Structures are given as C-alpha cells and as structure tokens.
Amino acid sequence: MQLRLDCIRCERGRFSLRGSGTFEEGVHLVWGPVGSGKSSLAFLIAGTLVPSEGSISRQGIDSLLMSMQFPEYHLTANTVEQEIKLWGVDVDRVLTVASLLGRERDDPLSLSRGELKQLELACILQKKVDLLLLDEPFGSLDCINRHEFCSRLEGRAKGITIIFTHDHSAFPRIDYFWELREGFLTFLGTPPNALVQWSSPPPYIKYLIQRGVIPKNVRFDDVMEAQCKIRD
Image (spheres, rainbow, N blue to C red):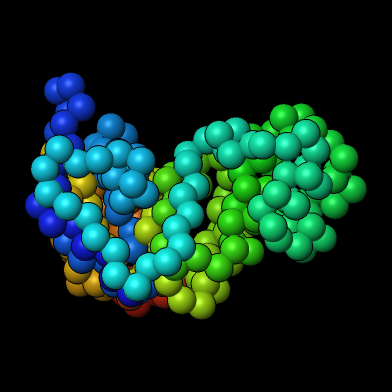
C-alpha cells in the first residue's frame, strides 16, 4: 500500500504548493501553520483538486475517506440516527463513543460543533478504509475528547492515515512526520529524530529538545516520560 506524489505543483492565485514524497502504511502527521496549504494538499490527495504539474499515484489503495475540517460539510440526514445509518456503521456503538446516547432522534444541526465532530469521527473510525485523510480533526474538540480520539485513532489496524493539522495540543503516536514550509512539502523523517527537524515545535517539546531530551514520539505520554528524564 503506497501513495506517491511526484513533483506536484498546485497554483491557486498567488498561492503555490509543491512537493514530492511517498506515503507508506502507517500514521503520517503533516504539520503546517494556518494558510500553509494543508487543506489544498488533502484535496489533491483525495482527487478533488488536480495538480497543475506532476502526478499522484496510489498502489494497493482501493478505498479512500476524507474528513474535512468542518463537520457540517458531512451532514446528509435529518436525525442523528439516520446520519449514522448512512455511514453504514453500528448505531449503538457510534452513539456510545460519541457520548450521544438518547439523542438519536435529534437534528444533527442541534448538536454543538464539538458534539457534531465527535459524531463524524466516531463514524469514520468505524469504517475500514485503505487511505484516511483527516483535515484538522482536533479543532472542535475539547482536551479530553482530543486525547480520546487520538487513542482510538491508534487502534486502526492497517492502512495509511494522514493527519493535516496546525494543532499543538494533542497528537496520536505517529510513524512519519512531514511539514509544509513556505509552500513546500518537506519530509522530516520518523520519530524521535524527526522532532529535532520540526521548525515550530510546541513550547513543551522545544524545551525538552533544548535540555537534550527528545521524546520518543509526539503523544502526551511520550512527552511526560521525557520530562521525567530531566534532572536539575
């Protein structure tokens, strides 16, 4: 299973995005600040945007699912229960995971954005797809639900998962690290060494690196373990 970007270029007005790389099976983090082209790259990979130059190829990938930043974009039904059924997943399981038991008859638009995002992500993680694209999946979630989602995401048995985010507050365990820098997609490598290459790490990781302690990965538990190794 492999996704390849060969010298792609995307021009949208004054915006330009370029890059090459191979995405293998595992969890990939594509980090970049707001406006760096993360959503454009996700749409290019999904096939809803066509690069002006270069090509994107998929080998061994038979199914693809993309989660857009705003959960309202995914709504197609009049009740929470109908929405879940249209995803083709277990209703009771999703209601439990999304903390929406007893609200199956509610209009999805009556939910808060955080609740709606929990509903969408709970449905997505019940699906078995080869390529999963998650554009800013953490933005509408509180701290507790961000960490719970990260834990569930790590349970994906196989496939390619790509997270596009500018978030600094919560991450799952990742296998590969990429960064968008001034319109270029840059492969930083694999943790822990990739963290040293990160141009804008969160303050808590930057502090650890400056003290000579590199976390094994980007999860909260990895950061806390690294913190315990620092001796004043």
